[in-house]
Image 1 (cartoon, one colour):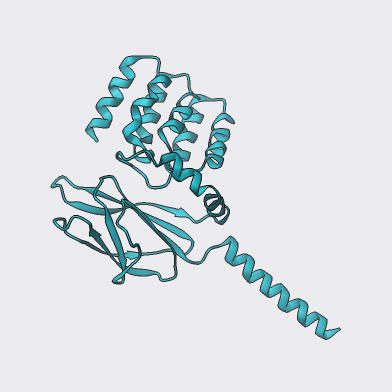
Image 2 (tube, one colour):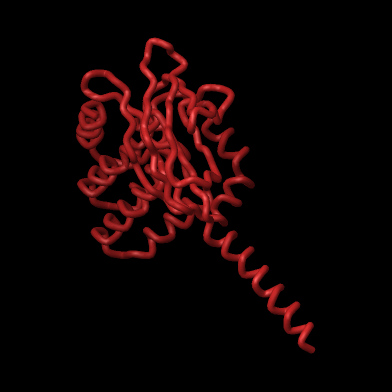
Length: 239
């Protein structure tokens, strides 16, 4: 009887460890994306983590808390970027590569997103579909990895669950800020509102969280007045 209790206890501990690892990821991810077409490679502690240069790079399952990051551009006329990056367990540290007013590339922290195991599994299942969906777009991008259709469906359900337009707007901003969306998905969000001013405010807010921002003209059908798109054109062009 004592042996059975010991075996049961060992199995319980083993299952608990596995469950904790699966539900609460201990390692970190590092995502770096650029808003410009210049491709780059990423080095962590002088080790290159990608064979080909790209404009969106994600490194997964990093098991150290601080790392020396180097960004090496494919264009050798551009200076390398060196930065010590501090990582958090179970967090995807998302950095944005952009140009400052002097035209020099700078790296800044954009977001700290929790690593959702179930979402990661869903992304693996749908990765080929998502790649083909956005593979024909080579324009400017304001975020690296758009949400999968299943997750966007949940976003729309959360928005439509609220009747008050101001509450919907607040919820929309909250959900947009924690996502990366396609311009067609932004259009669908805008169609959930009747007020033109609210639509304009949300479209402006979503600018930094839209993957294919070069297609922003596609949201024109969501607005009633031509002047709304003219205002958005001026806003987007000033960014």
